[in-house]
Image (cartoon, rainbow over all chains, first blue to last red; front, side, top):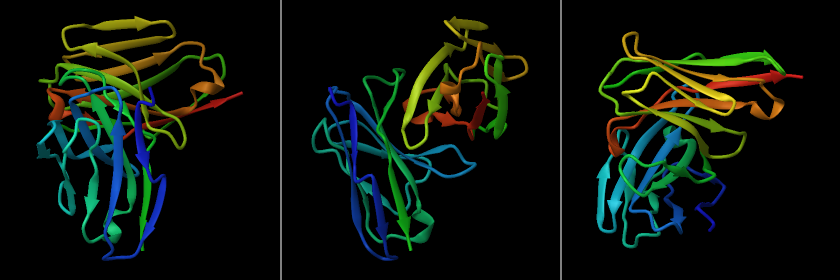
Length: 112
Length: 110
């Protein structure tokens, strides 16, 4: 099993550009989440999904969209990138609400 | 909302014990976790404790929970250079209610 994979590993965007961060898991997990990690702030939940076709907002959802058309994939879209979205983004999955979350290796995003 | 605080940095000598502390404000969490993040990598679950427990030991790791003081700690015995990483505590009252601490960077001096 590859676990949780994320692409790209690193991306540079200009303000106003759009892009999609990809996340995939091969563990048949129902629950998937996107977090951003900023210095001194730990991880903050952006969006999460409890199954295909079901998504909900986390703590910091503004500026991000998600969809969950399959169990395996949970892409995160930035429609119009802003410098405040410069961060490291982690995708995670788990098999249940109280189960261990497995994290991907992260995507480092720089918005100029 | 939940506030979870950690000291930013800890430095120990190889072979000594490390104690990483975490304080929180909301006592309704069911699970309390410790994650390890190595440079350039995602978070890896080290251990967790249920809120109805006071202590959990797992090889070199000991987790202590003081619910009265809302204090969680992770002790690493015989700290090795491979233990150098950032350690996050996290509290969960449900999937969408996981709150992570700010992280403690552990530096192990050979």
